[in-house]
Image (tube, rainbow, N blue to C red):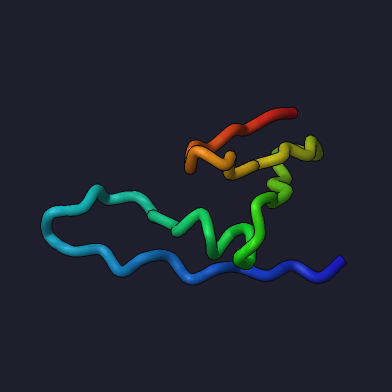
Length: 56
């Protein structure tokens, strides 16, 4: 499986100290992405209303 690491949004003095990503970058312009954490796969989905849902 190829892993693509999106570039984080460039931080400025007014942003937090942790990486920030555009959801559209994570989904490659689609509506869903998979996120792997500790061997578990999670699904990140953008709804029609523009909300994010993260499920296991």
